[in-house]
Length: 333
Image 1 (cartoon, rainbow, N blue to C red):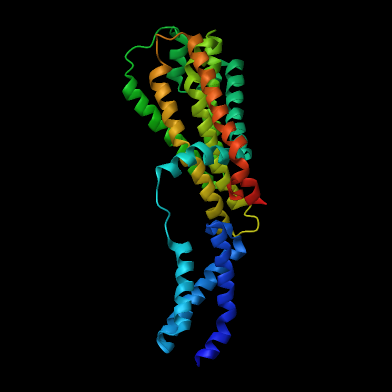
Image 2 (spheres, rainbow, N blue to C red; image 1 turned 90 degrees about the vertical axis):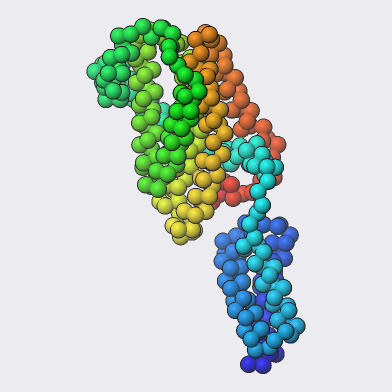
C-alpha cells in the first residue's frame, strides 16, 4: 500500500485520538473521559500502535512515522504512567478527599448503620424481656460473669500496650470483613453488622439490668464513637460492592464492580488512621481507673465533635472542587 493511501485510510482515526488527547491535556487526568470516550481512547490507541508498527516496517523514518510515534507516545503517557507517591497527596486524601468521599457516599453508610442498629435494638429488647435470651447473643459464661460480679470493681491486670495492639488488629479485621463480604451481594456485610450489633445491644441490656448504665456507656463511647463510625464506613463500602453486582446500571457487572470497587476501597483504606486512634483510646483511655465515668463521657463527646468537624469542614470548603466520580449515587445513575 502506498503511503498516501495509508494516510487517507487512517487519518480519521488519528484525528479522533488527537481530539481525545486535547481533552486530556486540558484536564490532565484520564478520569476526565466518560466510559464511551475511554473505550474509544483505548481502542484507537491500540489501532494507532498497529499503524505505527506498519509505518515503520514499510515506510521507514518518514514524517508519517514521526507523527504517529509522537501521537502514540502522548497517549501511552496517560494510560501507563504511574503517579508518584507523595506525602502531600496522602495528607490531601486523608484531610480532604476522604471526608468528601464519606459525605458523597453517605447513603450506603447510613444503610450499614441501620443494619448494626437493628441488631443492637433487637438483642437489647430480647435480653430485657428474658435474661435467658442473652445466651443467644453472648457466651453463657460471659453473661453469668457479668450478672454475678460487681461490675463497678476496677479493672486489674490490664496491659495497655498488649490490649491496644489486640484491639486495633481486631477492629481492622472487622472493618475488612464487612468490606470484603460485599462480594456476597452485600448479604454477608449485613450479617456481620447485625451480629456486631447483637453484641453491643446484649451487653447494654445486661448492664441496664445491673443498674450500671453510666458505667457501661463510659466503657463503650470513648473509643466506640470513632470505632463504630469507621466500621459503618467499611460496611457502606461493602454495600457499594454488593450494589455494583446487583445493580450495575449502564455498565457491565465487571465494569461496575471495578469502578465502584475503587470507591469502596478508598473508603476502607481511609479508615485506617481512625482505627488506629480508636484502638489507642480503647487500650489506654477507656480502661483507665483514674478517670471517672463522667470524665470518660466528656471525652466521648470530644471524639464526637472531632468526627463532626472532620467530615463537615472539608465538605463545606472543598466539595464543589472535587470529582463527580467520588459519588456512589452518580455512578449508580
